[in-house]
Image (cartoon, rainbow, N blue to C red; front, side, top):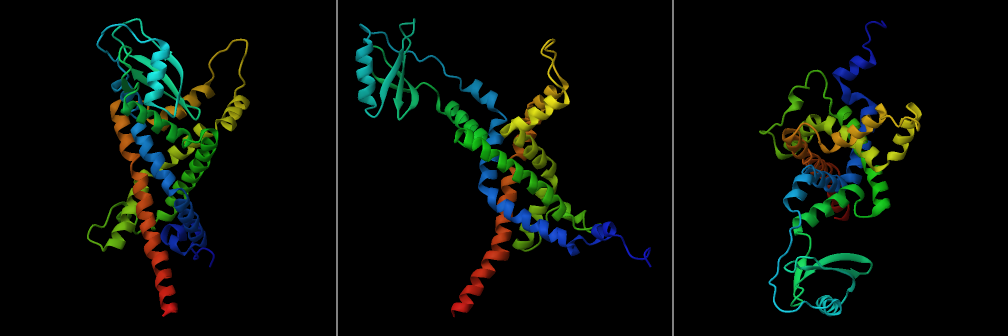
Length: 310
């Protein structure tokens, strides 16, 4: 009799929907996804752009701004007055004059403790705009958003929590997706002929299973990049640092590659293109997951509430 009864593993392979653990993991997956949805969009979109961070900064590297040399140069006091007239809510903290008489001067302005560098004509006092081109500044802003959510150390800690939840989403999503041995091939694709609810369901499942290893990798490496101290301590415990020889350690190379893998900084342009493209797919998972949750949970609740009101 015992041999005739299928094992739990065989039952899981054939009919995973019957297991209570799968239903519990579904709830974990659902609420984790709702909790980090907007975070995933911000992190993934910024990360896809930042795959090309070096190229963007090289392309939009600030170039010398030339002006027309005419008459005597303004004094530092005159430049300060011109800058504060242009930006009355700021104070001048520094003026950098170049040796080349045709170069604009750089004026550092402070407003509420936040500095910014503006260019001014040293002969007329005309405001020539920001020293850094807008695409360069946007790249820097995206980097701060991706690294610490624009909130310094607190944002970096939040990033660590978000990376943990992203890892949980990858693991629970892989378990939930498994449809059984009879339907796994069909579940790899999208049913374009189905109604819109079924279409969203199959799109969510297919995108999830094709990207799960990437999402799991980004989650784990993101935990390290946001909260490196435990990993560094573990590395020191595995391979203590030799202060006499200062020889490179294997664990340091491993941690170095963690960062490289996270941003796709290996393998050339093809790897970067792949990382950037796949990085845009987790937001698709959030949108499709949110639509499924809305149609299956929120809309029925709204209908029930209206029925009770009537």
